[in-house]
Image 1 (cartoon, rainbow, N blue to C red):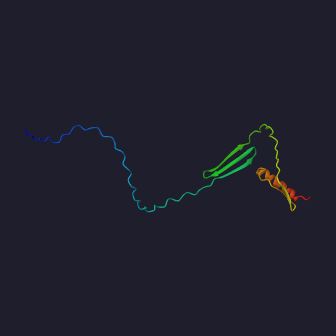
Image 2: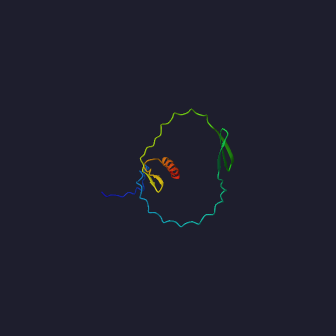
Image 3: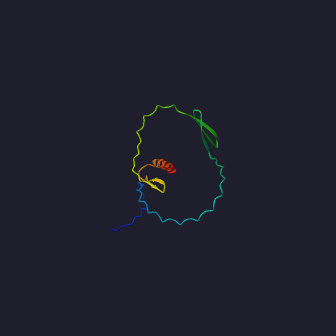
Length: 136
């Protein structure tokens, strides 16, 4: 039997569901930088600045705080609080150190490094200065 070709034309069926998205592609190479634009126009001049001033003044029964800024002057009075009860006595202070004491050319000196705080050293230095002024 002989075969016969039949032209059925274009046959379309119903549209199917969309397929899933594919994987993202690689980033492209960076582009070349553009040419700089023209400078912009000058901006408006700024307003004059105002530096606020603050003052605290002792007044009868408290302190008065005065603040002056661009909007004007504001004053606030802070009253002293009431006297509180006395606290318990603190522990007795003591200071012991065996620091080298030197008398050279009529001047008394002491090496306090590692023995006392900065406040102690300042006090002892003042006392030594008084001693060095004295005549024996």
